[in-house]
Image (cartoon, rainbow, N blue to C red; front, side, top):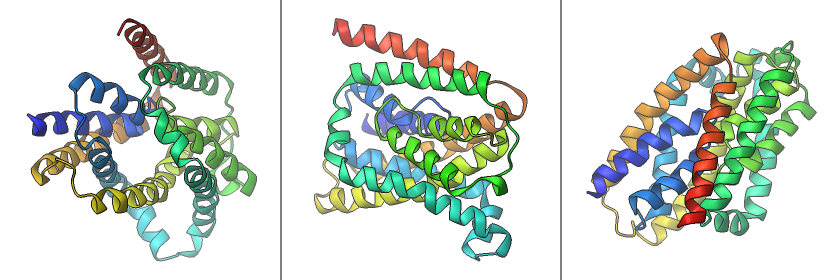
Length: 259
């Protein structure tokens, strides 16, 4: 039964990590629904590592050039470093506070409403003119600052970074590309620290088959989510995700109030 629950949570994590609807918020909600209490933090860490796999596959050309420190990627590398700093600093300083927020389903519902509002505003207010080469230090720092707020369950990391980029004039596909590449050091760094903690305490009731099932499903679902979001940004509107966040947010608030 735990393998099935882990597989389902992996699908949820993979889809919602990159679609702008908050993976942490959905994990809080579905862990409550599925009653998955044993080893929650441990499983979350592995699921997040699973979602890095599709980013590496889809953006391999960019990542390879970044690793090789090619000249035409120097500016992008700089922007990624600048964008990652606020999240790292705030995450470390306020770790205990943000961890406590994962206990509140009601708070998650309200944060989903805010995510929906941000996506709606970005869609109707953004004027996409800049390419990634035109992004400056203050632009990347602001994206990183907004991204740090996505530690709160219900605030979407991909949504926050894409919204912040669009409102600063970055083209839609460049905004998505920067968001996904920025997710690599942020997700890897944050969850590496958590991994040291959870491995020190053992797997806390989880088995490797349970973990592998979740990692596999999160990687496959994450791949599909990235491809779909890139398609939406090319041909559609982010407002569809606003409607989804508002619907789920209101449902969660009502549910939390009743139970």
